[in-house]
Image (cartoon, rainbow, N blue to C red):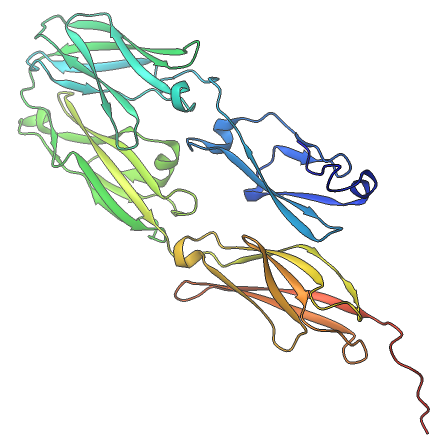
Length: 406
């Protein structure tokens, strides 16, 4: 990729320009040659590691040409290839069912995971091994496909073995497998049931660690050990398991660590309840994290002069600043200003970039140096603020004739 072309910068000028490539969000993967103008990969690019499940994977960076005090935005789109096979968290699964289980009963399984996107992601399941069982696939709120084993006919055999295949839509397709062992138990007339199929809660990101978000509740009308229930996570991501704790005896879900809206604003996981006779049921828990104003604006000086001639024309650029706030909405809207009584002003350069330029002619005989304070405040209530100081020395020019004292 050419960042500087012959038609815009001559071969001699391009060799003298100093280019600084700044990656947004600290992402690596590329570098630019200041003299050649080529943007090349510095390491192997893994789309799934960079963008996880995002539909579009775009690396954004800025090219700062220090010699011209300009900034250019660069976007590189990373396309997906079918380099991941659908995998089950466990390749050996065990289901326990009562001999009185009614035909049509469904047993939820953990879904297979494939970090690829589109046709390269998980597309279908296939169940084989026993005519007494069939397969049902349910779509979750996040679009994921969750397999369920469905009992077709009442069966009194003590043991069954099934094979579950998960395939993606790539060419050629990739397939992962899991073996399911079904054990038929003595009668336990009633399976536990949750009070609702989906539990939804909204919580601010500054909720204290240890707080109870909600309680899932299930009942089982059986007596004795067959009516005792125990809760557990059935399907949960690593991030969610690090953030939440489930009390196995009460169903209370507590905050395990500090939440961060800027890191993750939504969690969804499955909880399971199982009675003493090994019958189970599952429910979905959705947690939405709301933003609070917990990030102050960040001011970064990307390029700046340390000296300027006193005869510099008004509008001369002396510094290039990048200002951002990781919060969202009004909490992330930033207003910038300069200290009073300085001969400089702010101009927006590109998105979150600002240029500090001279507002009028300078006079070294009146002020030989300036400490320019840049202030940034967000739109939160109360507002969070930050600042940065630019030190600039004014160079003398011969603009005064000698004058006799008497």
